Image 1 (cartoon, rainbow, N blue to C red):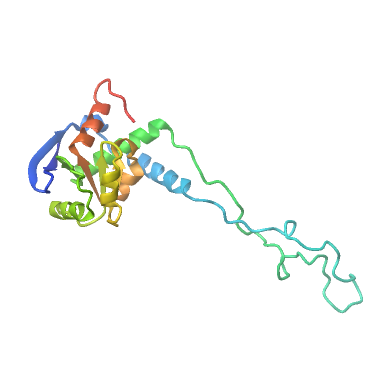
Image 2 (cartoon, rainbow, N blue to C red):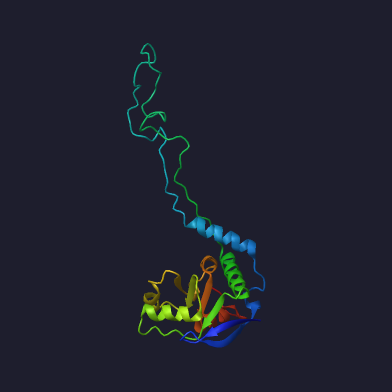
Length: 213
């Protein structure tokens, strides 16, 4: 069991919440986490850098001047890479960097990321989050009162536009519905803040017979 610090809606300490580590695999699979992070970053690459070879550059195919008796170096095409506006030799070509992550890899990596955060005492639980009125300063004050000083990922039970409006102007805070959490986002942020309802969703989906995301 691991005890997660619990805070009330004002950011004051309200005890702890016990969580069974066995629900999250009991083991942090570091190699899998590394693999998933590399794939996730590769999938964000556009791969649009593209240069034209001498065969793709627009221009005449006529030989610029006769081969001999001109006193100049021989030249066969104005599209030569040696010429201005010619083709590019060994330049970047458009390519696809995307790689596939299986559902099993995604689930296991998320469990490992969550378990690692819990063991490192970087996961906190918020008893409740009142989105009315949706004011950024209220959420900023809550984050400050809890004691977060670096990047924070706030997980809520489902999408709520009011919470999103509260957080959108806070540069070090990101908001995700709990079912959209992934290992990359969990690892990229220093601290993870779960609402009590979001934690209940995670635990219920990983309990015996529960459906995992």
